[in-house]
Image 1 (cartoon, rainbow, N blue to C red):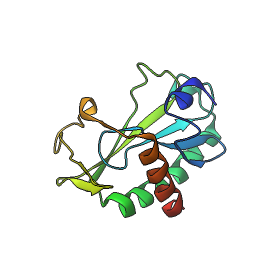
Image 2 (image 1 turned 90 degrees about the vertical axis):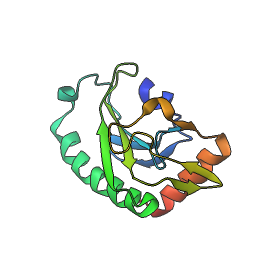
Image 3 (image 1 turned 135 degrees about the vertical axis):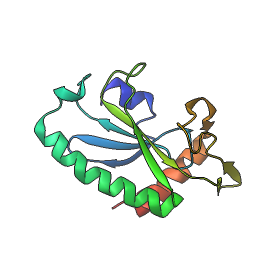
Image 4 (image 1 turned 180 degrees about the vertical axis):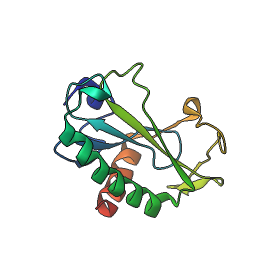
Length: 142
């Protein structure tokens, strides 16, 4: 796995692995259910990915949106490709909602709603919470 994938907690945060992509739980939750969709290659530009990765990405996004809709009942979903600090190809997948979500005794507001997501307001999950939320997502991921 590339350094970006490892930085986001792989393998502890792994939800689903595909041939070209991994879906990871984002340890710092911008909103409840925030994920990282990361290319497994060493590519640092989106255009460097092989055509097969783009075809597979379409299928992965359907699975991601289905799982997050069931988990969070999001109103909208944002895909952010920032790659400033972590250079390998990846997207931050941020479910968006107008009303806070509760999970495991914690409130997860969407402080940026209805504007841009507030990455600076992410709630850091503790290791047991990461394991628990990963297990929930693994169970509902198709």
